[in-house]
Image 1 (tube, rainbow, N blue to C red):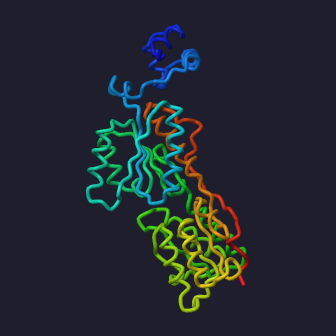
Image 2 (image 1 turned 180 degrees about the vertical axis):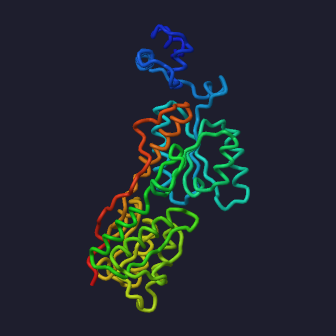
Image 3 (image 1 turned 90 degrees about the horizontal axis):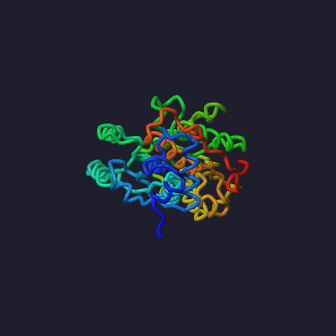
Length: 343
């Protein structure tokens, strides 16, 4: 027979209401009581019925992950990170893709929230960067955590945000190229509506300035976070025999860098002997190319898991943030075979 909450309560010697409070992770439960109930839960292998919990009252036992990102690797990593925390908390995960450019996106978003009765949301860029969406969520009284590209000094409401320091990571990648003797470093940018694009560009510019290398608009290609953009960007930057004497290309992400590498090989350019190429994020793209890409490792599954931790802390009304939550992440340089010394 299926184990019920009543069975857990009898074994633990507490009321069913107390078991419910423990399962729902209410902050007011004493540790001794929590340990007693969880011991009974584990002994009986009790599995709460999520649907029944949602129907039983006003509390919701599901959170949402909202994204508008064509990169499947990014989405899967984000999903896995949030889902791992949901399993720990006994919650379900509702995954909702949005089209940032859809005129009805905000209304669709609002309908989804009301229909799913979510306890909270994890928002990814560029949706997390839109003030109109944040205002709507505040008006609805919905808990949320925003994943944002930025630095510690950028955010006032730190309790609502997980930051990724793209600026520092782009500085480190650019400085790596400079250390190899590169001075004519081109940059194929990602989508302009993503703050990560402007942050990575700012880090690139800062590194050039720190090493007294002159900036040049002719070395910047405004693209998108896609393989095709990398192909088109590299072809444009290197056309007519590379008149700008470019010796390195920084891709806005790994897909862009993989596209740039593909285009360079079509032009019979040796990587890295004649041209160094770097990516960003350390997605599987960076390890599936030949040569493998130098990049910046961004642990999206870990980042999203911390976002979910922060969201659950907020949803439970905890006055103190979960001490295990890390709110700022800086992608770290990973040097591989796609970069070498400038000629």
